[in-house]
Amino acid sequence: MSSTTSIPSDYQNGNPLLYTFRDYHTGIHPYFILPIQFLIFDFSLRFWDKAVYDTWLLPMEFIEIQRDEEPEPLPQRRHRQIIQSPPKPQNSFSISSLFFVEHYKKVSIKTKTKGKTIPIYDLYDLIFSCLPLLAHAIWYCVIQSNCMSGDNATLWNCYNLFGYRIYNYLLSPFISFTFNFISKTILIIQKRREGISIFQRKQKWRRITVIIIFFLSLIVSIITFLFVGGMILPYFFTNAFPMIIIYCFIVFIYIYIFTVINIFLKCYTITTGRVFSLKNEKLNFYQRIIKKLHYNRLVFVHLSLRLFPYLMSILFNLSQYFYYGETFWNSLSREASSRDPTAFFDRSGNSSQLAHTALSST
Figure (cartoon, one colour):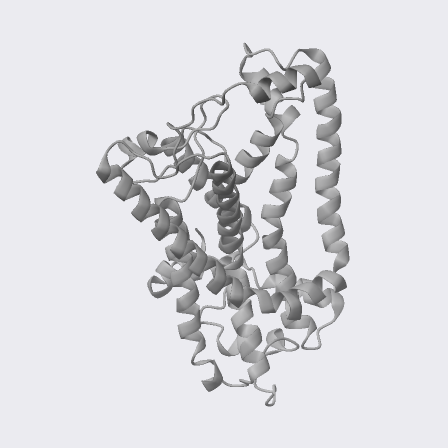
């Protein structure tokens, strides 16, 4: 590394390239943007599922709901009678794929309980999830190509600069995509094991449309998962995981908060289960909410897993100061100061970075 005498004191004891490229896509979001970003990811998919599949559930929540709604084992004698009885016809069930909204429900797959439709590979994965994420990842590879031309550039510094960019802009949408990708894959495997035909349609054009969109979304999803995941994974071992160990008290506080919430919900659901019968189908709105919390306490476990990438990006940022000689506590202060809301709004008002800021926030 070259001399750091030309670097202002505010950038000392940190990756010098954060100063060299301070006006070139290294600014990160203030803390208040992080929950907004999470809600954008969450509600955009929920509204899509509601419009297309008539459910507010995310794919990973569908898996948990199905497990909770499985009937309790019956007595042995009655169980044998059920096994010997002819299976219910399932030819009308099929995997959903998207073409126009008004046709979605006609090509959707239904569960065996309450006629719910299951979210599966569709145009949301292709247009709103995979392509923006993949394009953004390629774009960061392109702008990284001139890193070695900057002042104080070394392989190690450029390596850290690239990780700084992708962990602050790609990690959260990638994890959101990964949860959906894995959950939908599990749902497909479950339906195939049940012998459900996934491409059976009455009209030939619908069958062709289903096949094209399904496999196109699947192929692009696999490419996105492998390409972006391959970019993110090395930094987990070199930067994120060491910071998880060094700043383990932050992780413990995070786990403690969600553990307390789950303990509270456990006591809450036991109490509500004794107040009224949750098996009663004629429930008012309040009772339906209680019933969902009663049977789906793991929703907060899922929430903690989906929020953890935001914490991991913060931990990664600490390595950009701790690895360069900053003290334990000053690294925390430097990370917080790098999320100055004033600088964020200045970047947002810059027309040359407007598209980048908008894409990075959704």
